[in-house]
Length: 140
Image 1 (cartoon, rainbow, N blue to C red):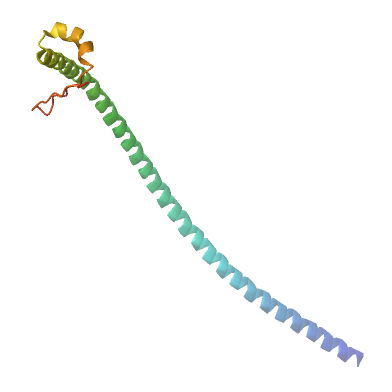
Image 2 (image 1 turned 90 degrees about the vertical axis):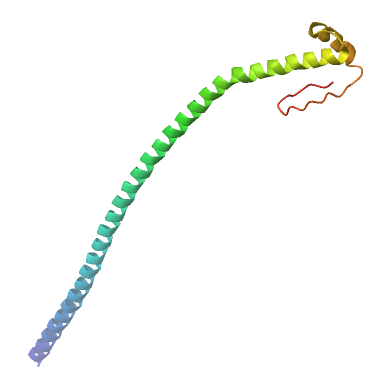
């Protein structure tokens, strides 16, 4: 009888070990499937990252070109402004000369005397009208 119990115990242990092995095999197969899917996902992610890094390099290159072009345009504009400055100063000087002539005509003196009588004329403001849209006269 003891021998029979030992046989049943060994048979039970063997059946439990077989069941455990079957469960472990299934678990390992599911784990392998999951790992294969993770591997595919990683491969896809690497491809996307490489594409994005290529696009980022292209965008960076285009941004650098745009900055260089903007710097060139800025230098060009600064050069043009510097070339126009003397013209604007000349126009200002012409405006002042016209103002002196206008003052002289209004006060009945010569342009050189107009600057000396200018202090006298500040007591009474007089309006000066011009038909030219570019002529800016100072009125005091």
